[in-house]
Image 1 (cartoon, rainbow, N blue to C red):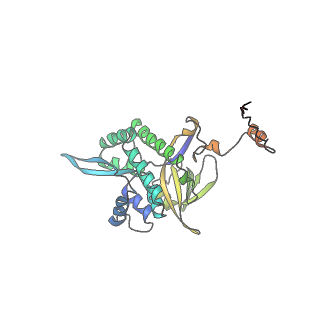
Image 2 (image 1 turned 90 degrees about the vertical axis):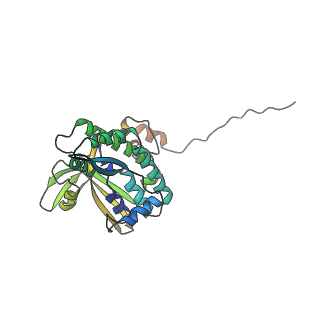
Image 3 (image 1 turned 45 degrees about the vertical axis):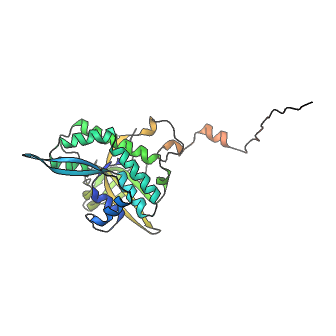
Length: 266
């Protein structure tokens, strides 16, 4: 079975926006703060190409850095550092290396589109699979981190089933439906029927949250193939029990008897 996950790579602006909601995403000071405290990874550089050769570089990051920035903003520095280290480890892995190589072969505009959440027309199957591989790794890291089960951050990911002038209807595969302002979906480049979109509700206080619309990608559900991890928040098997489980757990527990051998010296 497939699941819908947030786009696994981001530009610097999204990290800054997560750390300082409402501020300028191009601001330098917030990003310097993140780097000074090691709440963000170094990112991965891709060479820009021009007619006469190379023309500088562009940098993209694991989306885990966005989570790290939110954790830092909420005051959870240890968790932010841990997530940034996980992002750095992912960026130095084989999946990112392949993605970087494929992006470096694209024209500048197309590479920027991919990092921003859009696969250009005619994109290779290898590029799509590389993105899915990074997304799967990202989801596994998130599933293994208990701090991310906090209700301070809620992700609603699905497929757009209906589009009108003012809103789109976002439907989860197994879950509720919600309406999203069309301008939000358009900003994520996901305002067409069939497009994959994720809404991230980021808690500011008890009555306020920042809701961000981000592009999404369809991946295979790793919970179906991975070994069972009872503390993984992303493993649906932790959320339900079978009828046999219910019968076993019903009633009062039996007393535990422990037989201990005793030696008596005569």
